Image (cartoon, rainbow, N blue to C red; front, side, top):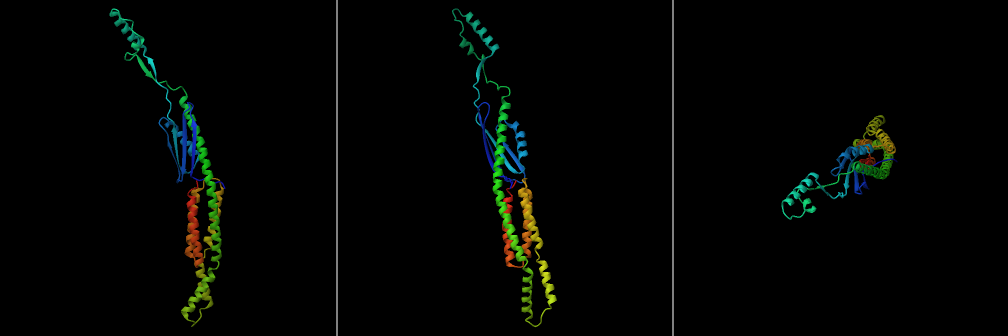
Length: 298
């Protein structure tokens, strides 16, 4: 039975080209439609459209939240670089001042470099293509996480399919019991009507058999549940077909459970015996459990 749940979790760790580690965590819960929410650290916003498209192409329903965490990067230490123009000016100025002072030694290099503006701090720029490689690694990790999430939802779907199948079996059995009791309703109507007339008339006169048969037929017609039982059987077959189809069937299955409920309600309203009323209540309980489980199906 190919079935997918809307609940699941996946975690995928990876390493960027520069050795920095990252982790994807994906969570999926029930939803009326498909809602994908991405939480990306600063500097990775340009990835969002591609990742969102990949998720929406993979899943049809569910609220999916995906968060990316990247370890703090080991940024290269800044390096000191002389400003050529400032250095030339500093050397010329130092030499000029030293020449004006008798006996003044030649200016030392460290003194010149210590002059304001001679040295500047620079952070090495990222090599060309490095950012593209980072984003490619992160996107690949996301795709693997989507695979894991799909597998988790499939595993949950297998368990869900077994539960739904058991509930459909229970409904089918109850439907069969209801059919047996429903066949006894005309005789029960006749017995109750005869007893009521006998008590009312106190044996003074008999009601013509033809009139009694007509009244029984009218009561039996009002309490005829064959149509409801036939529709219940058809709904069970339709639900089993949906479960075996291998396609997202959650919405249609939820709609079908509403139809189940209508038939069970009508069955209870038409019941002429405590036994049939009890079965209709059991049917409603089983259908409610079916509805709750169907809400998990993609």
